[in-house]
Image 1 (cartoon, rainbow, N blue to C red):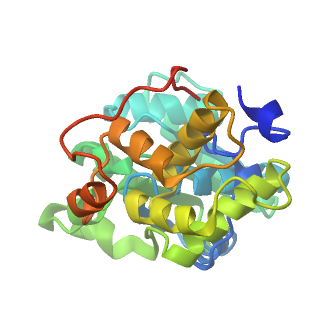
Image 2 (cartoon, one colour):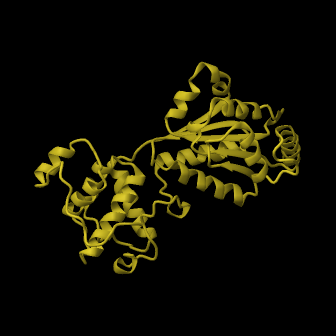
Image 3 (cartoon, rainbow, N blue to C red):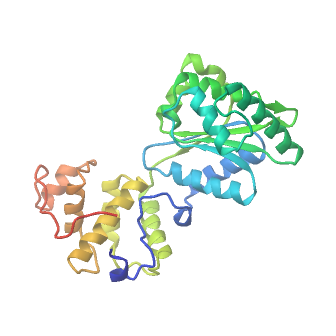
Length: 297
């Protein structure tokens, strides 16, 4: 809606994970490198964790692009609220296994044949599970059993489990100690520091077509970091709403007053929130007036 007004070629703060807007912070580069290394080296089990909104799904999208580019077969389970038989059926569909996909036994045999064929061609196969913290115990146990596909050169199936910190706590349970012992690589994404948040905003604006940031003053970006607590998804939501508010007010520069309004509407909480809002003249318990345009992406 506001792209033409600000001169953007595309929306800079879309909430959907887009590898084209991947911000290569040190930790994100390291995590992606570990994921690729784990796949290439046939390490078996890899775990990627991070708080909500820290970029796990975007990381997985980047990995998927890599797998597509290198013609590596993979299955992607995006719905983790599944039973074991549903998991095998989804794997069979994603890998296009020629078998009765409702039969666990046939899926395992067909999967074994595919894995052996891929290794013979010098390739590997990957299973990616997003939102893995939601997996039931019996599904995690079935995933552990998939680690038995191996030869002397390493694991035939590389399993990447991505989820919130609850996944680490779940894997610490005594009944999952066998799975925990098989995890070779662990990656953890943390919220940005202030400098990273500022660079993240600048990078996304640049990729959207704004070479020089003229819309977010330095002090405003610092405040965005404080209120988002460095979580990329919240940074995107705040900036998107700020741009929409500025567009509605026909202003080409966003302000702290606009930020007060946006973060109040978003019901955001952050350390020192009440003190900051009082100093800006707003009541912490009263919502700011609604803008003329309804917000949206």
